[in-house]
Image 1 (cartoon, rainbow, N blue to C red):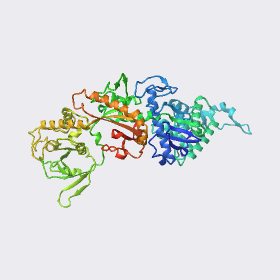
Image 2: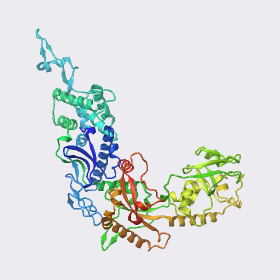
Image 3: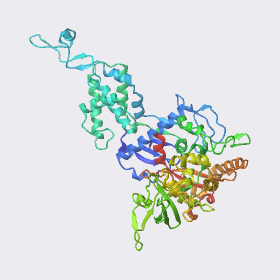
Image 4: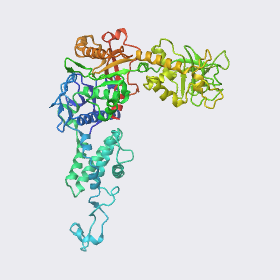
Length: 630
């Protein structure tokens, strides 16, 4: 059993091993690069336990991907692989990977958890639970069968204390070796956050009721030692009193024994459990996240080697906005960038510190009061189900604290610090030249045109059918304020508050097309390369030459090939900006943010990387891990 209090934590800077190893007699848990700031915070049993099971689940997921894709066979042989060149499906012991490490090997010299889980066989467990066991209840008419086990009293009377009888009710009459295994199995499954069958839980509860106190757990810091001692004593008693010991019995006995008595400290120095090249796992985590969370039509290219086939369906069967098939070939050699994404201008807009102040305006459109003014904004905002003569500002007060104006009575001021709830919609005339800050404001106030970007709708018909039509928006100029089908969206949002004239259908369409064209021009293609290095490595000037030779030149080639492809187009995509970024790991377990960089800022002058040409994205390991094992 692993004593989580005795684990020492470190980062292996020599190569990419992550897992448990023995160093000069000490048990050390090697964590990924990027964990340096968190090591000193892992100072108790529970944090060590949670971290171990997190990596157990990550390695389990990655190993299953390798098996499903044929990279790993029954004897743990991995296919040889040239990461940025032609992939060879030869069997061997290593995977070539960008020069980082030469081998990718799973270590399990003492896989205490795996041995316990591998013994699980539900039909066999339920069958064993109903086999013979000692009982103090027996059929007196059959006592003659047990006289050779009897105790004979001075008066020659035969006394039979116990008999071997078949169990009929599984959940109440199970043998102790099975209930003990089920208890340990359930304890491990709970730590892995995996489902457990009710029948197995019932058997585990039977063991806990008989031998343990309420709330005891072998994975709890307060009860760990006591529960471990009880389990060892109980296993010895079970073994001593079990009369029938067949192969099935020994299978579960040995799994329990290894779990309870397995001692990492008895192993020789070296790797005990883990994986030799964590770079591939890190790549699998990053690319799996992109495949799950990126709009498929915007995910133009993806290295699919370490991604589940079930996740890839969404990517493979989607029509791409820009077709990059057969793009990454040069001198008859096929290259393999990690990921290429068409980043919507909204992706450049992921900032949470919105700060707009707005107040109500007396303008009325067919009795709908939707006009809101403020510094740098004059807009119409309406909400679903809005009633006439009720100002939008009244509804907004439910979500943003109001401030009364010190000199103007009845004027309500709201500070908008986060995007409007989705029941609100807005519209205003967009400027001739749209900037990223204009789109940021449109996103905050749910401008109708910005909704087109969110839903990847780049033509008017799709936008009208998907966004406007479900809200009963039309542009029938014959409608009046008394019309039963009138609504705040049609009669207020799409009216010019200056001229008081109704917008024409054609005008809105032209405005929409102008907006989409400029928004696409602000979009970019991002070439993502997954890197298993620290920020310090990239910022160290002594590594500049190595980084250029190994990574930057490769990005130049990718960008050049994409540019060649785009120049063949005759649409708004033929002159898109192309940028590169390196994704590096960093651990921030208490933050929900995936990336820790301000998308509007590059590194400062004193912290500049590659003359600001390639962007370093510090990616939160914690967010990726939960997504990966989900």
